[in-house]
Length: 125
Image (tube, rainbow, N blue to C red):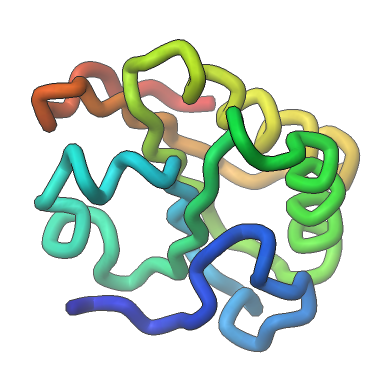
């Protein structure tokens, strides 16, 4: 495994976690690692991962947490991995709102994974 940080759940990672400093963040919806087994080999090396569910978790808490992280951690980049299903559609918006609220410009790439485990779309965000 290329995992370099713990915890990985968005709700459990404190904004002051040392592993966030200067990180290339990989923000993945909870279902992505199950649907896309290549996550470890293809996206995890060199990145700090945080996972969560934009449907079942509190979106406002996510915005507040990411805003605090973006303000203080000098994040280099964000890669957002989400599923093609409607319940994942809010994840990029959460990250955009947090970037806006933090006042920090961070490059972001949004990658959509199909239910069959294939990359369906890649775009900048």
